[in-house]
Image (cartoon, rainbow, N blue to C red; front, side, top):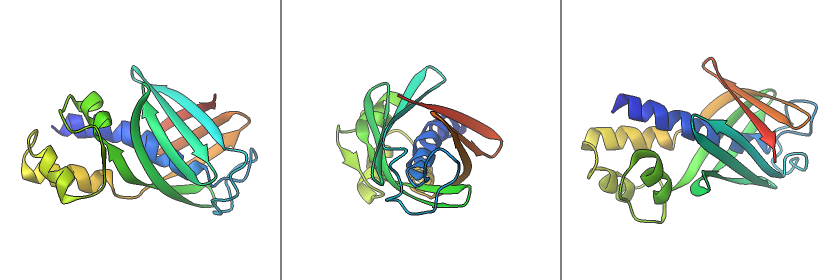
Length: 164
């Protein structure tokens, strides 16, 4: 179960942290923290992680991600200097079904008792609570932008995205 959390955590981290990137102010580096200062990042960014294609769509401060074309998460972000903080607001059942082989309903879930209860069909109550709490907790990382390349680094792990 711990390896499952780590795997999904990496996938989710890749998605969550990129939500924060909308706040950067262009191609010269970290942004101002103003989510409306996102014109340089509006559009789609992609990376391949393991055997999955992660796609992030940006639109003036809102963001959502897809994994191999499947709806993933939606979230919020803030920036400060070269630090970004992203937070998942909703996760789609299809995303969990695809990444973890679950059988959840095909709908959006928030940090709710409903999601925790649905997950308990696949894991213990304690594991479901830990999973949901981790999934919806803010994540902070360092970032930089150079041309069409976005680099995110956290806990020694680096993920590179390319503008599509």
